[in-house]
Length: 256
Ligand code: PGA
Figure 1 (cartoon, helix red, strand yellow):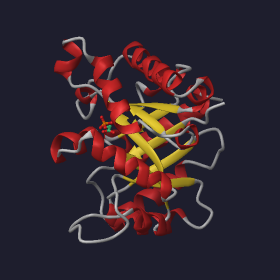
Figure 2: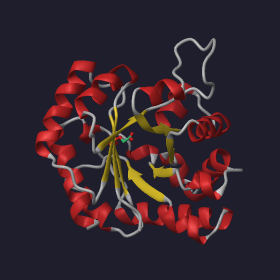
Figure 3: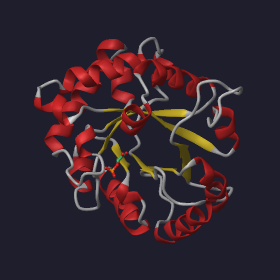
Figure 4: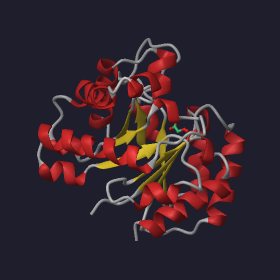
């Protein structure tokens, strides 16, 4: 049984004090419940205040939005896994399309980051997804498979047990134009098949696959009602405590 997972990707939004205020507000709206796991991924600069606001018995986990694959060294502007661990991070989003498109991250680099995350005790959330042109050319499946291959090749079954995959079509991110549930389900099935072929049935049955791209309180129910969609990676709608809490509640109900 896969525990549903709702991840809020704050991107480059909220200062440290805004993060603390947001979390206090969210915790008032949302009592703890084991039926869905919740992760918040604030910017690096807000991780410490977010961790403090979540408190010592936090039931919401913290995630980072990126890391460097080395532990330390001359990498100006970068942040390493041990630094993130010490601030209380348990997850890290890797391979987001904004990192790929705006910062030139390629699958080989994403693979290095995934390996570092795994050895340093952070659970990677690997993002994959096609552009509109790739979808229109009928290349969705091959693009996603190439990304999966490039970033997951060589990992063991045990490694995969800690990995989450987020299918995020690039054309759906921040556009208000979410994929249809059918489109998401089709790609989710091919991702699960990729894992089954590359590893085995047990690994494919256990891995969590999320949908991301313009998820809102209005469309979350349809995505989360699908048996193969294990949760959501939420951008814009996670910045508002009311809409994020609503999406978490929907996950709790749909997956109960
Ligand atoms: P969005 O972003 O929900 O604003 O489309 C999702 C993401 O980029 O992870």
